[in-house]
Length: 541
Image (cartoon, rainbow, N blue to C red; front, side, top):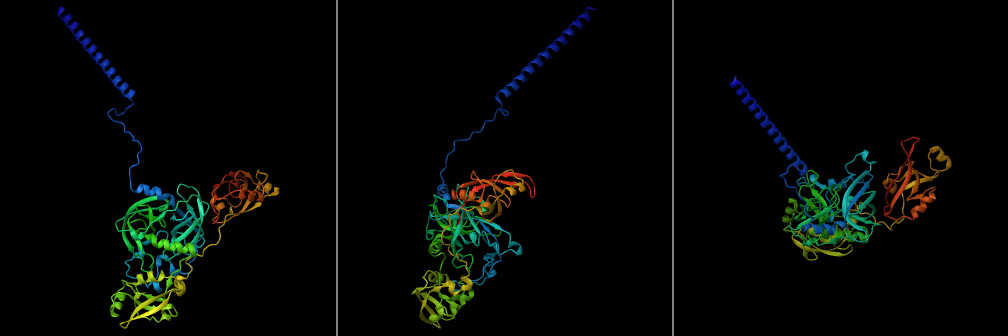
C-alpha cells in the first residue's frame, strides 16, 4: 500500500508542477503581448521600421524658359468672340476651300498639294461656311489668343479669330474681368487683325523681335490659351522657315515649329529666347485637328508691316500691275520658261484688260525677268516687289518676248481695284471712328406703378421691370432676364428709370456692379425670390 501511496503522491506533484509551469507561461505571454501593443500604441506607427518622408523648402530651379514666361505672360490675352452666323455672301471664298488667287499673287492650280488643305486646320475655321439653314439663328462662341503690342490697348491677333464677330471680349493675365474690344482692321491675305481694348490700365506690350534673324534649330516658345487653358506655355524649336502651306495664299510664308500649339493658341505669340515676338501662331498641320508636332507662325516682320498699315489706314493696300501667272513649282511653268529660252522669271499667262501692264504694252506669253534692273526668279519675288511699292509709283519691268529683252514702264495700281471680285470683297474692315465711353447696361426697363406691383404680387413698394435684354450686353452677361424687377443697383435703391441713370453716371468700365432683383421662381408662379446678379462693367467699344 505504501508503494501505491507514494505513486499517487508523486503523480499529484507532477501534475501540480505541470499546471504551475503552464500558468507561468500564460502570464509571461500575456505580459509580452501587452507590452508590444503598448509600444505600438505609444509610437503611433503602423510600420515602425519605415522612415517618414519630408518636403524640402521651395527652391526656384534655374531655367531658360521661366524668365520668358514671367516676362511675356502679362502681354498675352485670351480672346472670346460671339457670332450670329449668316449665310456667306461669296461661298467660293471659304477659308477651308481656298480657291486659286489670280493677279499679281499668281494663279494656283488647286491640285497636287498632297491633301494639305484636308488637314491644315486654322484654329477656328469659318463658322459660316459649314452650316445649313439651322445655323443662321444660332449664336456661336469661339476662343483664341492675342498679344498686346501697344500700351494704348492695341492687340495683334488672327483675322480668323475675330472674323465677322458680333462681339469681341478680352481677358488679361491675373484679371478676372473681361473687357470689350473693337475691331480696328483686318487683313485676310495674311490672316491678321488688330483690335483695341479700352478701360484697362497698366498694359504691358510685348517686345517685338526680328524674324529675319531666326534660324532653323533655334529654341521657340509659344504662349496662348489652347482649349481655353489660359497662359499655357510650351517650347520647341524652329523646324523650318519660309514654309508655304497653301500656294494660293502668297503672303503667308510661315515659320514652322514643333512647340505644342492647339486650337485656342491662334493669334498668340511665338517667342525667341530673349522673350521677343518672332511670329503670330496661325495654323497647324494635323489629321486629328489637334497638335501633331507641326505648327505655323506668321513671321513678325510681316505682321508689323500689316499692323502699321492698319493703324494708319484701317486696312492694307497692296500694289498690283494686272498680270496672272502660274505657280513656280508647276511643271507647265517650268516648261513655258524653257520654251521661252530662260531658266528663271515669271511667265505671264494673262493680262488684265485696261490694267497697268496692258496699258504699258505687256502681253500674254511674255516672261518678266527683272524689275528696276533686279533679276526676278519667280512669282513670289515679283509679288513681294510689286506689293511693297506704293500705289501710284512706277516700276520698270524687263520682259523676254520672242528672244528679245524689252523694258516697260508700269504704274502700280491698287490690287483691290484691279481684281475687285477677289480682293475687293470687303475682307478688310472699315475703321471705326471715335470711341464710346458711356456705360450702358443693355436693357429696356419701365418704372413700376403701384397697381402693377399689386398685380405682380411682390412685397417691394417700388422698382423697375426689365422689358428686354439686348444680345451681347452687360445685362445678358450677368443673366438678367425679361420680367426681372430691379430694386437696387450697386447698393443704391432703385425706384424709377431716373434712379438707374443716376447710378450709371457714377460707374466706369471695370467697376464691379451688383444688382438686387426679384425674379419669379417659375413662369407664371406667384412666388418671387431675391437674386444678386453681378459682374464687371466692360468698356463700350
